[in-house]
Length: 146
Image (cartoon, rainbow, N blue to C red; front, side, top):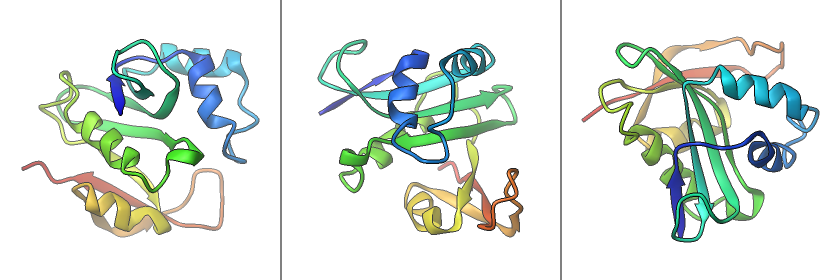
């Protein structure tokens, strides 16, 4: 069982980020600064009570609450991948009380497009170059609100 929490500390995010090679160089002070400029955070924790339990998945959202809600840093703990936690995280992003009027969008690695499509996102027609110059193209995806 996981619980949705609409907030996270830099330490909690770092715990998840360190599981990925491309985020393991993030410094706590930088993550703290990023959080100060992040409009919304969705964190899933173990347990049944918000504010307690270990972090198992997270996403940061930058939004104007009307037209745009860009989802960044979607991450699921390694031992929780393939268990439905990622889908729960994306549902929690879509159902966030302050984001219900805007359709979230994100940039997805090509290999994750089928996952995001299963969560209700639709791919735009063209790929986007990775901002860090990585060779893998990214796919712009927007959630198709029902």
